[in-house]
Length: 419
Image 1: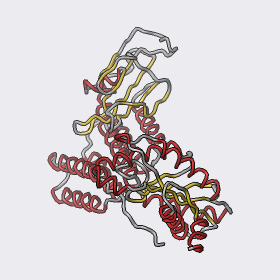
Image 2: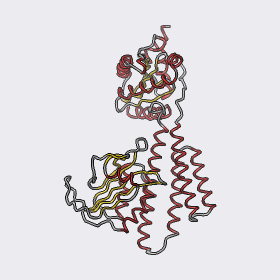
Image 3: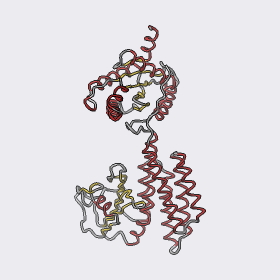
Image 4: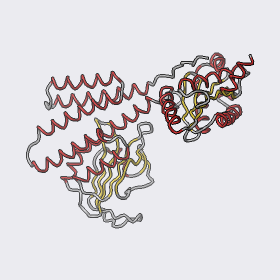
């Protein structure tokens, strides 16, 4: 039986993130040109690089475009520096290093920790907490910290979350408290100086940076000036990193169900096949298909069909082990990669899933069933395509034998032989 090639839903979210990236880069380039920091020719070249990267829709191209703009920004700052050369050199070095972090660090925790280290190079502090806004909820959460986590007003709710950082996010201006006269706090952290800096990019809040020190009047006017200078660059780096993360996530995620998409499943299947050959391991593939799904769509509409798929996906996520990979293969067909699992164990797991689905009340109290096909390495083949084909064949046999059942590839072959 040939493998069905049904494609998943395209990700409008990914397109929106890419367009947001493009607009942000273009605004930055135009700002440089408006300030006569770059020529019209340089501006056009940079915009062309951004547009070319966006048309490719690959994270690597977008990162290269961002690096190009960042490098230009650093060169502009360098060639326009005047006075107090030693101080400016230090600030420029920090600005340059902040800009470089996104090029040299791909791990979120490492990136955020590096940003806090760079701030400490030009502003003294004992404790620092970097809050980052969740693009989905709009709330602030701790991205990284050095020393202790200090919050002056805990338990008070604001639009972006709770605590002093959320209040500063609402005010959108740097707040410096030079002498708190509070000494040692109940959490045994001594705080006398406190500064909270909103991290903004072109009017958009990205996060908040809190700094504290046990000595009064630590944060001088010069430090505030430096913080305002590096806050925008830090926010820009964080924004770009989060956008790259989101683009990477959307590129491998099905928009409707939140499961992995077919392309990512096939990539992981190839990797698992190579690993199984190398270490003489086994694994199984389990196909799941909603019985009479077309009838459900025809009689009740695609909106209900979508709700059913979302609920079914939620059931699979709860049923699956942490090592399993659940994906939407296309249409109403879902697929699970079960590492280190033979066909018999995968069939037993599939039977438990089948029973859970049959007992679950779906949207509008609909009772639904699923058919499942199972194939494994190496019995069904040693190539990814062969294993997927045998699992798909087993699923077809489950449908042909009355639905609401689990059929392995060997059982499907026996049924075909008997016929």
